[in-house]
Image 1 (cartoon, rainbow, N blue to C red):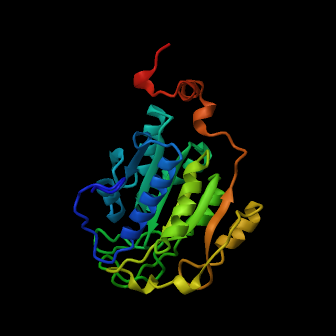
Image 2: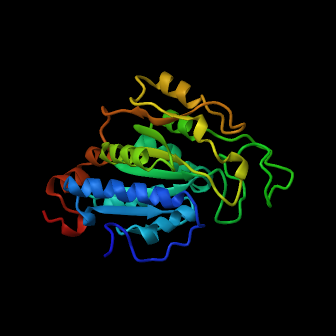
Length: 279
């Protein structure tokens, strides 16, 4: 019997890849939401290019397999076409913070009601392990045999300062916690950013096995200063420090983009997309 939200496509991730667990976390989340009344046809997704992009093949919802670095504008396009859809985006750390950086820093300002899920393994894994913006300084790979010469960026701090209204971090191996955070992210009425830390079993192995450094906190921070301090506990470069998992920030006071635009507000009210719109 076919499992809910699961396709019959053969899964070609490396055996033991944490992407299997991310897929299960997402399926668990969607099943929970469907039990609460969200129909399968009301979900849509966009994916980029990378190991994460195969979510498009394995997750049984509508969507667009997009271009590298263009997950966010594709999500926005889907949302503008039908603001009633629950739109998810799956992207990688290279996909989001390199080619897609310009889109990422503006997504928080726009505050469309979409959920961006970033699979962060600190490497371009699909293309054999080149460094990404979150790879640690000194990381040696085929493209940089003498080591990456630049510092890593901190995506959580970047999302906070870019005014994302929901910012969270999870551990790919903790399916229950990841599913819990994802459900809260999807229910948040605004732009939600969830970073999922995962090992890569083929490349940048020195960043793996960080579970002992991780701890969960239960409530979002009371202000941006506290959230930034929490995000600064772990250094993406040297790997030292405690890794906080949970919701760093949630701002429920802002109006999402769709409700700021009269045309989209009317579609929301009528619960239709442009194809079903009648004056």
